[in-house]
Length: 228
Length: 228
DNA sequence: CGAGGTATTGACGGCTCTCAAGTCTGGTGG
DNA sequence: CCACCAGACTTGAGAGCCGTCAATACCTCG
Image 1 (cartoon, each protein chain N blue to C red):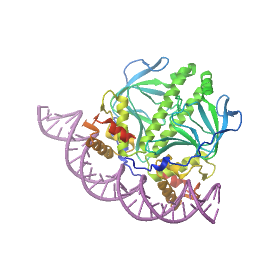
Image 2 (cartoon, each protein chain N blue to C red):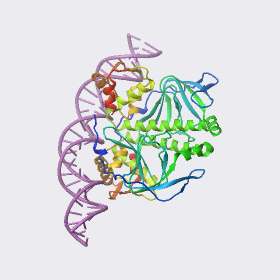
Image 3 (cartoon, rainbow over the protein chains, first blue to last red):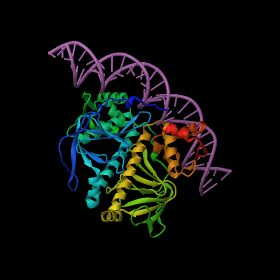
Image 4 (tube, chains in turn purple, blue, green, red):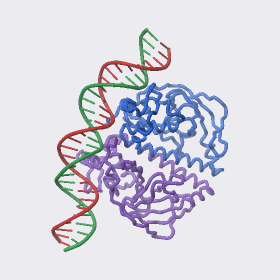
C-alpha cells in the first residue's frame, strides 16, 4: 500500500519561532502599480503558512528560499515547488491555502495583504491581468513539473539541476539551498536514489560535487540528453 | 535512459477531419456576463489545438470529452487532464498554448474567442475575477494530480476511479470515455499495469468491470483507503 | 465473417525502494 | 584549537513493483 519512506514527515522543525518584522513598509516591484508589503525573516524549516489556513497574504521571496508542499496521510511529502528570490508564491485565490509553505533555510520574505491586491485588481485591470499572468505561469510550471515525475531517476535529477541552474544561474556552479530530502520530495524519489544518481552523474563526468550543497555542471549536453 | 513504452506516440488518429460548425451562436453559462461562442463537433482523436499554436480561443465541453497533454521527445505522452461536459479548458493566458488538446471520442465543444473574453475582463472586473478563479482551480487540480503520480499503481488507479466517479457521477457506475492508453498516460503507468490493477481491484471486490469502458464501484471504502 | 485495433494475461528483468551501515560535515563546548 | 556530537549524506545488499516483450482474447466495424 505505501511503498515509499514514511519517515519524511518526522523532520526537524524549529518550533515557536515567531516571524520578525524587519521594516515597516516595502514596495513590491514587478507590479504595474505600487503594492506594499512587510519583510519578515523566517528561520530554517519555519512554517510560512499551512494548508487549510485562510489565505490572507501572498508572499515574495527577498532572500533565501521557500518550498510549497502537500503531505499525504501516510506521511509522504510532495514538494510542489521551490521559490527563489524575486518570485511570488501563495497565489491560489481561494479563501484558504491548498498547500503548506516553509522556509528552506533562513530567509526574508515580503508579506503582502491579499485584500489590498484584490482591491487594486478591481480598480486597475492591469493588476488583474498581472495576477492572471502570474497564476497562469505557475500553472505552466506545475505542468512541466508533472513531466519530470514520469521519468527515470537520472532524467529527474538532471532536469532538476538544469532547472535550478536556469533559475539561480549565473555560471555553471549552483549552491543548492535545499537538502537531499527536499530534492527527493520534489522529484518523487528517495534521498538514497537522489544521492546515488548524483554519484552516477559525477562518475559520468556530467557534474562534480565539491560539497554536498554545491554542484558544478561539467557537461550540460549530457544533462540535456537525459532531460529529454 | 528511456524506460517506459515509447509506442505511445504512434496512435491512431483520424486525420483531416475538419471541425463542423453546428450553430451560429451560443451562450456560455457560468460567466457573470454574457459570453458567446461557437459549438464545433470533433471526431475521435481529432486535434483541438496544438502546443505552440497561438492561443486565440478557449474551449468549453458541451458533450463528449477532451484531453490535454504534452509529449516528451522520446514519445512518451503525459495527459495533464481530462475535460468533461461543462468544463472549460485552454486557459493559460500566454499568447501560445503550452500543451495540446484532442477530442477523446466524438465531442461537441464550444469555441470562444479569447479576445472577447479579455475585452470583457478589462471592462468588468467580475469577469477578470472569474477567469482568475478558473485558472486557480485548474492550478489546484494539477497539483492534486501531481500527488497521484508519486503513488503506487493501485493508489493511482483507485484515485482515478474516484475522481471520475466524482466528476461524472450520479451513481456508482462510470462509463469511461477514454481508452486504457489514455488512463495509463494520465496516471504515468503502462496500459498493462492499468489493466492488471483493474483486475486486482475486481478480484478484491472493490469494483466490477462489466465491459472495459464501464466500471462499477462496489466498495468505495476500499478505494478510499487506497487513495490515502 | 474476417480484420484491426483494443484489452487482458503471463514471464521475466531492471529500476528504485527499503533496510542498514558507514562517512562526512557543521556546530558546540571544553 | 580540538574533541565531540547530531544531523546529513553516501554506499551497499536485497526485495518488490512495474515496465518490457509476447501471446492470446475481445470487440467493433466494414
